[in-house]
Image (cartoon, rainbow over the protein chains, first blue to last red):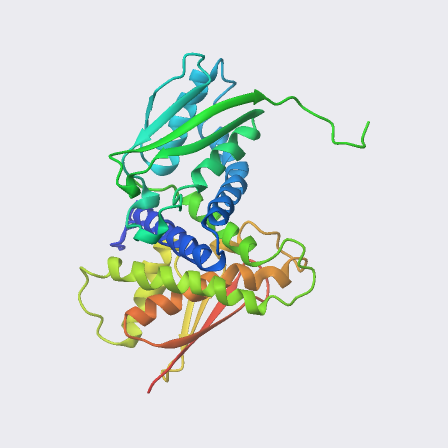
Length: 178
Length: 158
């Protein structure tokens, strides 16, 4: 979408600035927290806040309706990855009960310029994604949890995100209100 | 493989809320803003190198600033800087009348106190980008009425 007279591609610049800023954030968190688990938790929390807002944009863009089953949900999550990160992960490794599946992808804009130093083994660099998924799904009454089981940045051949269905959320009245 | 534009906005607001505790009522956030500025500096310093690697060298300081105000600004903030002024002695004032990171906040005076937190990142981006182009400077920003903001850049000559 280069404007006439502009030689920079706005989409690309935005994407790269996002990547670099996320990197700056992770390295700041590594400095701020002593424990790497706290960094992972903080990233997840930030992702949650992003997901809660992102779902509105997703629904507006796709006009998507209710999911019939969890396989349907899986496809919609896949669409989300395509829309927002420009990658199409593979849906695979369904559990027999159909309540758990994996998304596999090899690279993503988040990790584009990233190399993890040796002392960062406990760091889940992309943990923001698990938060985004939890936040976004919670807003459409789905309670899910997800975790990275393989990570490209740590020498695995592929990044694998395992997503598990927990329950459907019912509309609940806040405590203390009738 | 590009990240959608909205992600940068959402990430930016997470950065802001990371440095500003949610219950900050009083206006004592100056110390934390330097972290936010540093995020920007870091990213600006790195991205400008990627963006300008195939460009001819800028003729002079003013040309560099013109590039920042037009191509660079519009690729990130969706519009050019509305007004660039300089005294030709190393002071530049960049004015954006509809700043992207303020555009989703209500206008009026209610949230004016929070505005510095939403432009600190960009002050850093400017300082970082200019630093990597060989211009060391001080960047201060002011918001008088949302969503407009002004960046004052003072070039440090040694």
